[in-house]
Length: 104
Image (cartoon, rainbow, N blue to C red; front, side):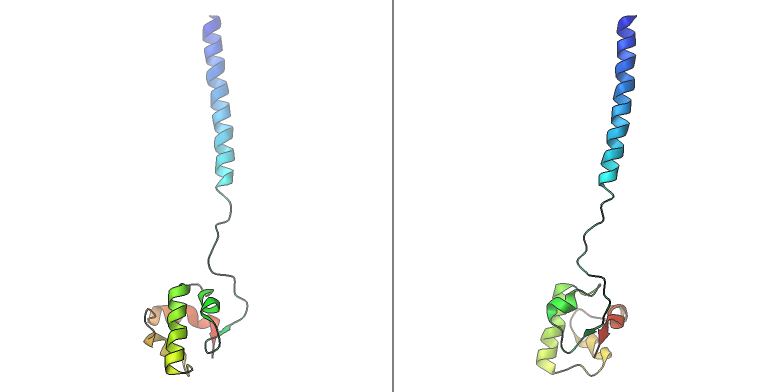
């Protein structure tokens, strides 16, 4: 009888401990994820920005940002946003996403 009581007590305590540790573990998973882009409050000048500055725009990344800078160095300043589709890796969809964050 005593062994049965101890066994039941052990099971109940194990379940309580398990549920509380799962709660703590779940709480650890709610940490905000890191992002590579920043919350933008000002527009970035397409003709003056560095690749690092352009890469902060969500949807660009470092590779496309560098392609924009390379294109600008080879072809001169952008006179319209539509010229961005001539940059390798940037299509109409990407242009539509990033244009609100750019200025000429």
